[in-house]
Amino acid sequence: MDWTREEVEAIVADYLLMLTLELSGQKYSKAEHRRQLRTKLLQRSEGSVEFKHCNISAVMIDLGFPSIRGYQPRGNYQRLLAEVAEERIGSKPSLDQAALSAVQQPAVAPIQTEFSSVKTSPPTRQHRAAEAQATYLRRAVKRDYLEREAHNRSLGLAGEQFVVQFEHWRLNQLGLSKLADRVDHVSQSKGDGLGYDILSFEADGRERLIEVKTTSFARETPFFVTKSELALSHEAKDQFRLYRLFEFRQSPRLFELSGALSQHCELDPITYRASFG
Image 1 (cartoon, rainbow, N blue to C red):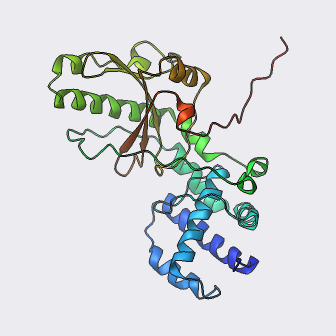
Image 2: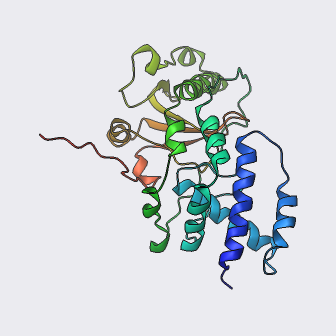
Image 3: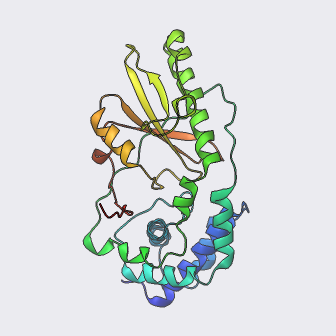
């Protein structure tokens, strides 16, 4: 049975409240929120409510917002859900303030010596049905908070420094201390624009070109790549690695994408350079 507008409005309002609390660093109980929410719904099961929360996560990401941790984004959501979320967001200045604060605050790389539980698998690539393509939402977005976070230089640098530590650890674990000593933070030593941030090495001495993308949010959070990074991932596909750091402020973890980025991700050309010759 399709969700009614009243049900959708109730679950979206509750999701946005939880997201505001989470971005503000305040504790809340998802179970208690679900319990109270279900009294406003038409006998929806726990599983149905949780699935809808995951749909809202996908909507929020399409609108340029972070999503609630633990509610993995699921696409193919109903258009009504996107419409209600867009309407509600416009009347939530507290959410805007919390999101801005969360993406703009500075970050520092933690000092860490044990990295055995840091690496995990990448998200599964989803292929969405035609109706779920929410590009029409982009025109109504007041701010793209995920893009703002991508431009947080403090967070980006902290993520790169963390990966330098990780690469030292990885190579030393392989008994390759001489290679570990040669790891180079090239975005600092040589400058931006190379298409990667860190020069590291494989076990056989071949170069590993690492581009680092860091977020404070969930593993499925989209990231932004430059033209030079995308080109390098194709031209040096045997050497290129993208390290995606996520949940950086809580407990940093990362996954790795090897080679051409187009084989791992949907690439959305959201901006173009317009010139006259």
